[in-house]
Length: 227
Image 1 (cartoon, rainbow, N blue to C red):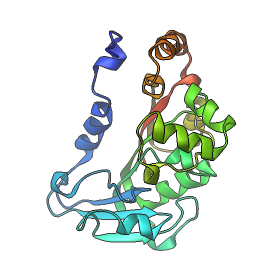
Image 2 (image 1 turned 30 degrees about the vertical axis):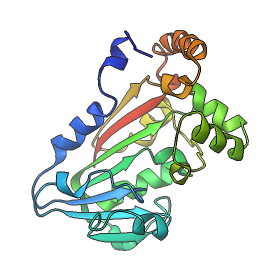
Image 3 (image 1 turned 60 degrees about the vertical axis):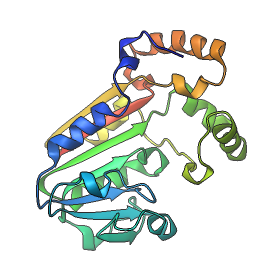
């Protein structure tokens, strides 16, 4: 459906892409967390002479990425500290992965340790108290996967169980309180989960209009932090 609400007029990816573009410079080293088969920044859009490293729980996922996606692929859990990565990266990216991580606080602490002094962490994640997250938490995983595939047209290979650990505004601000600079931007863009049935989507939008006044109910969060 066509939206008249200003928050839906802006292209979905633009705030994230703008933040990423601001941090890019030649020769930098980038860690892409949970990137798997779809690296956050395609090779042709990266700054010259950069080193791009993928970190994912599954080496199969990393190897399913297009050839040349990573200069190095590391199989590991971002919630478990990897000493070899300490103080190694100018930028750490985490696009729509942190809602799948538990414990989130340990993951963010590790990301902080992986950055060089003054390095930047950019993250984008789904909110714990968004309506679709609450439904996802209640429904059996198999049923949720069926709905994402058949109602929303999602590829089965891109659907993973979500934990939503500490994934709300207040918790994220607390977790990031030790960083030199940190900003958590609340976003409200959940109607696409209900687009399969127009009346339901319209009803959802009325509800979402109310949640805009409540940061902890946001559908997504954009994190920008400097260590």
